[in-house]
Image (cartoon, rainbow, N blue to C red; front, side, top):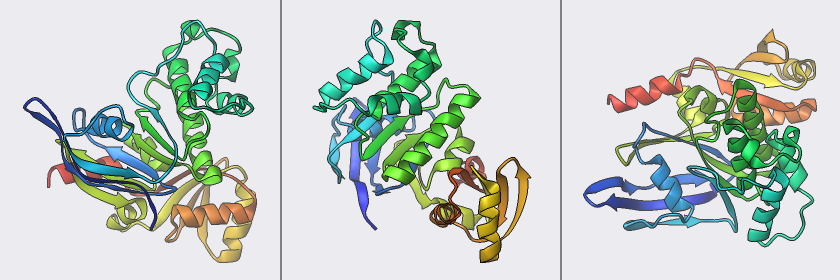
Length: 289
């Protein structure tokens, strides 16, 4: 397996407090990697070191890609400029001279409704979307997002979730995401690392997590359920239609298999998650030993 990020015994100390303790993880290329931990567990410190915002006291890390984007802590932007102008400045910072993809990014994060309004007039959620847009400038190979859906309304959460899945599937972009909303993270992540008191206590793939619950059912939402049903019928899968373009499919189906099925059906995968798998419950059980 190819890894886009590898860390080896990363350690970070603040005076007597050890925020990270010998952290070693491997992030597969093309994955959506969920970083899970309580407040103060070390998630943001790890992301800041990987992004080059802080320096570790011990250990090394290696990134196998030419460019990364990141949204960590409070997004940086110019309050008197609009979204397009802020992204143009970021493109210049990155040495990108073509601005053709800026409108695409603005549309992706749902900021097209802002038009030419200055950022000073944006709500908290809109500023969070702008931070996401800045992280996506130039469509980097690796994107690091610390609580990216913090402050977003339910509709905004769906927009960002679908955007991440689309960029991962169509452009092969790798995402490292931390979030307190574990149910939302479970819908998109292909891999997980659990961190507690600065230590990685478990790294596991989503299908392995699924297997630990002995479940063989997935939930999926697609752009055209009828087209997917024809493919599922042809391949002998058992399923139920639960809502508009929402299905419960029985069988040992991974995200990779689901992507292949929707591609064959000519439709788009909008949501995917393993049924009967509580990410929160699994994490709590890890903490309790």
